Image 1: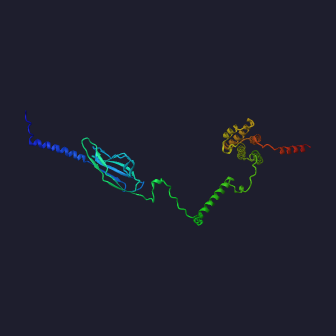
Image 2: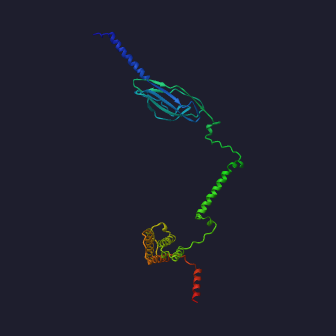
Length: 340
């Protein structure tokens, strides 16, 4: 059987160097991360909440497992909420992984948070690191807390005696407010009375029927004899104004703001005695438009025709309230007296 030749001196040195290098590399890799746990404060009110931040500074190619908690860290410290680990790049080779735990405690006193263990996840490397222990003081600012009594109401405010003198400093504001309210009410009242203060103190008389007003104004135009004096445009303007106001009061059509064609369209939808009535009002309105806008000079008989048609339209469309039996009897008696 042949003998295994002994390694020479140079070969032994090379192999030893490789073994040491591999061991040192593994040890350095295992140590290439650091951990830390930092609370927002070391003092907390009982039942209050605060955040505790867990951080791992590590190389990019490592995977570090955070401590695994359920709903408590210790029996006196509970976890209310937690975030998922968040990664921040430090430089080309290192990263910072952070997780936030929101904690609370319902037991007053000094509590210790034990070191938290982080573990390197690797099949070839095994390394664990722990944070430092943390002291947390939980204080109770309440006079008495008895869990067996359950939740109690907030302490009622202390009742203090009321004095009228306390309102003296507010008296100018109160009087000013009342005066402002009275002024606003008076303004609204006068506005409703069509901005005429005298009407607030005078009872309204029954409004005259629309045809009575229109016929009276037509009589006034007739006696003015404007077109005979050469004021043809003024004659037709006053004539159409009377008819437009009459149409508005009689049918509720806003005739003063409408043009002739719009007025005629509205009148077609109301209950007129016959088509002849619509033809009469059309002649008056269109004749006036020609005079006012086209500067037409109508013949004398055309001016008289417009006035006659205005009378005709009002008389044919007027509405009179039905007379009472007493009024009918009085009229009948008068007619009989005249006949005798």
